[in-house]
Length: 352
Image (cartoon, rainbow, N blue to C red):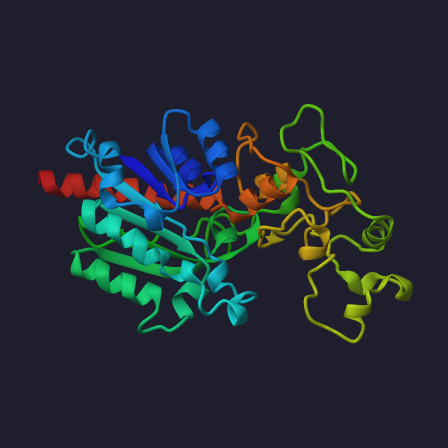
């Protein structure tokens, strides 16, 4: 089974699908650093560095024609989620990226892949339910003869050490399809959710602003003396409520919102959802649970289930953004395996 990764970023979905047993044929993204990262880690795949809005369906024909008759194909898409984020919604109602799902549909319509996988923030589903991008996409899938199932899932229930809620869709032209059941949490054999420390506890300590000499991307952002005092005053799993009065920022006085910023992760629980600023102490609960700094790029990658050998290229800000934007590898792997199981059952039923 062959996988094509639209809006691939650095390749979180591709890595999960590869671990599930799919062959990665093509990645598409416009970010140059993500393109470099993808090419380095998926050397046998091809990559198109460009905006999908400027691509024609025929532009990927050469990557599909050689395999089309022999093996089924899977199209995956995780379009940029910022237009649908709760934090961005008030100022981004006219964001042109909202129609990227429609752009993806051009390729689905042209090649009719046996399977489609989509991951995005829950807000993609809730904005303008009847005429919004997700509702339109579902109607277009139905017209093309696809069965589908979709749901807002929690990533920690699929082996990801994060409280990350995402809208996921699986579609198939071969028959009715359902999302895989959770592997972790209540009602499963693994009732304990994966924790931060299970993901990052093996990494050696570094200081704020330091880069480890041998572990790729184990690099942490520097902290001002003031912010170093603030994180030292914050307990693991806690927030700025621990600070003495002289460390409180003026903008936080009398304000109870954004409680996660400057917070520390708890060791024995999943982290909060990583964002594009996941290595910045002031942008979320991204403080290391033990060391006095924000998590490193490598630690963020571990929380996204990337293997240690997966290397990210670019500067500190870019690599952190790539990791935060990625689909968690363990979740993509689970959905990739469910696609393979569905196809095997289809083949078995067809032979009867």
